[in-house]
Figure (cartoon, rainbow, N blue to C red):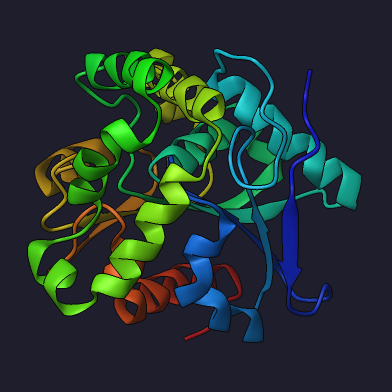
Length: 258
């Protein structure tokens, strides 16, 4: 059963719609560095089930369920198709949508995401740890993968905000989304994706390394890969200008712009 996702719409509804899907442990506010995209697109930002203001039903969850929630949201809003931009868990939801509901996804941007994240034990073990000790027990380890040491030193207030946001999530919702990542394997579906795709990787991401992103890109019919320097897992936060430019360039191809 789908859940009603908490969401925000930014920009003129007459413009092409871009759905923005956040990373595990964050909310739709993580896309604040990209809010300026609303000058050209209608942005639909939402919280995954178990995150932010969305319901947190008992788990475990699957990426299929997370994707079905998005389809239900689009149906509720009367949106037949949209472009999709997701990071990490959000990127894997986008991959699922583009491979299972190709008619709903115009163009796809998947940041710091793969068809399968390995080792899967990282996420199954984390689910156990969160259920046993709460989100505070894993916050330091998780946030250390989100940002480079240089960014932590330069902008500690931003790092602190994301840490507080992580520890403020539903423990059950977070753990259940960890289990969604642990069970997700889209490797046999990627060849079915018709939507032109851009993969974005952080040069310093310890979770999805650039070499893995480049190899992954070769499995698509139509995909480009961009590696962003001086960025770890939350690449859109560390390098907002570069990421926004890449997103606009990829989407502009759809509109036939130079």
